[in-house]
Every structure is written in C-alpha cells, then in structure tokens.
Length: 169
Image (cartoon, rainbow, N blue to C red; front, top):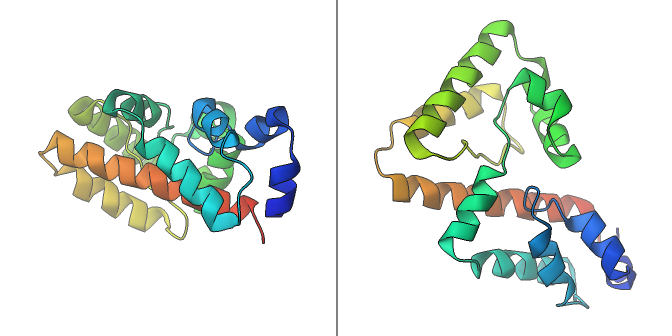
C-alpha cells in the first residue's frame, strides 16, 4: 500500500488495516489516524512508535500481555492474528517437531511465571535456533524491569517490521 493510499483511507478503513500493528491494540491505530496525513513511510512509523512511547507503563504492559506465545502449536492455527501467524510461519514455528513444541511450551511457561508477560521477540530474519537461544538467554535475566524494557523494544521492532511490510513507497 502506498502512503497516499493510507492517507486516503477512511478512519474506519485505517483502523481496520492497522489495528494489529501493536498486537490486538486498536487504540494506537485510532490515535495514529488522527495524525494523518503522513509525509512518507518513515513518518507513519514514527507516529505509531511515538503513540506507543507516550503510553504509561501499565498500558505498555497490557500490550505486552496481548502478544502470543511463540511456537505453541494450537495458537499458531487458532488464536493468532494474521500478522502473527505469518511471522511465526515465516521462521518455521508452524512446523516444529514435537520436542521443539514441548521446549517452546516449557520456556513460555517459565518465562511467564518469572516475568508475568509472554516472551516477545521480533522473529523476522530469525530461525528456530536463534529464537530458542534468545529465549534461553533472556530466561537467565533476573531484572524484571530490564526484561520489560527489552520486551517493549521488541514490540516496537515488531511494529516497525509490520508497517514496513505493509507500506511500499
């Protein structure tokens, strides 16, 4: 979609197209809609990121909680947004072995128990091995604030990747 096409969308169409840039969070699309017209793709990305950055920490944590577990068999087909399905499918998380699914399940459970949020990693350009290594590394983190900050950074990367893929100037 070209930036001029984005600028010409009705508010309803804009929100429908961009409500999952931040997983299951239409409020950022709603507030970003009010900042149109965008000059270019980078301007649009900056607006979305700034809208997220302006949220208080509790609102950011709620967005983190909306993110799906990585590599969980049932969620890959049933509960993921289309964007998350595509992202996980593109790195092979939809065809994990049974042992890999069990490993992801165990690590997801450990991570949520430890940090009270799902493990979030911008998977674009990664593979199962890289994701597992990152999962293991972050599970060793003892500082919850540091891990929340890392998760917030990952969410912003995901949003940038999603917008970059949708908008072609």
